[in-house]
Image: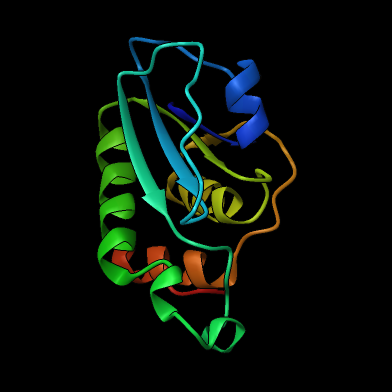
Amino acid sequence: MPRIENVSYADILKGNYQNDPLKSLLIQIVDPYMDFPSPPQWFTQHLRFRFMDLSDPGEDDINLSNMLNQTDADLIANVLKVCLEGDLNVTVHCVAGLSRSGAVAEVGEIMGFEYIGRTKIPNVHVKSLLLKELGLSYD
């Protein structure tokens, strides 16, 4: 069974994550103004996304484009499906490694990935968009 793990930006820089270079995909999530960290270990593939840790459109009245959009959520959900079917491990990071990456990891766990236990405080917006694409309801 493939595993999914959520980590922080700093964890990626320090190499503090489990990795099988031939069977691991990295999903990187940073704020729109940030650079992506370079992991010291190789991953089969990287997916990169820039969006803020916002759960409610009212939190960012100036620019709603700073939130995860349905197109990117669909891509993340479909990549998780492919990884699960292909027995690929997933490491996902955001800035703190709790909310955005926690939502992706929690959805992965629901899908059937083995969760590598770290604290997660899933972003409601991210989780709901991913579950919507997977045809699952938010509970």
